[in-house]
Amino acid sequence: MPAGLTSARAAVAVAPLATQIQTFPIPKVSDEDAWLKVEACGVCGTDWEFYERTPWGAKLGPIILGHEIVGEIVSIGDTAARKWGVAEGSRVAVEEFLPCGVCSRCRSGNYRLCSQTDSRGDAPFLRYGAVSTQVRPSLWGGFAEIMYLHPDS
Image 1 (cartoon, rainbow, N blue to C red):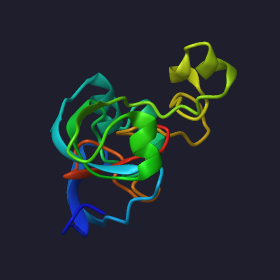
Image 2 (tube, helix red, strand yellow):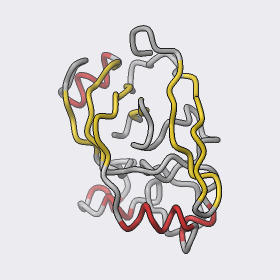
Image 3 (tube, one colour):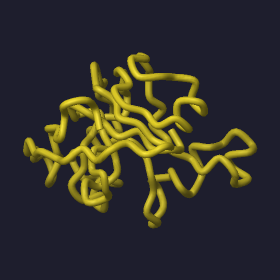
Image 4 (cartoon, rainbow, N blue to C red):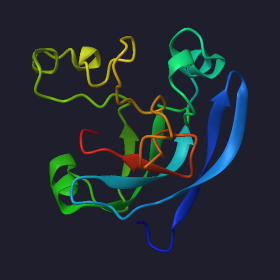
């Protein structure tokens, strides 16, 4: 966990056009992931569709919007640091998609269509700004003070 931080606040879209400020615990970083202090987050048309809950947003549950994110790495595991080429204190821009990296779509460069990250299907998926806060560690979007960086980032 980032030094001295045990929780983070986030703006959670809880229903169509409704937001609540909620607080979530920050677990200790593992060897393969990291925590990011969000410095800025853009808003795009997808955020609006998710916030209105149409068409894709209807199935997402409570979410922390925001997938156009820049920030500072505040805690990172050794494997993640080597894999990503960053360290604590590095400023980064975050790719919204969290593809598996091994399927045929990922290997052909079409990682946005990887079933692990494609929000258009009915299966659960991983994509910053669109993962339910019910999926731990909850802090999956840029409208948060601190954001989780998944091993497939």
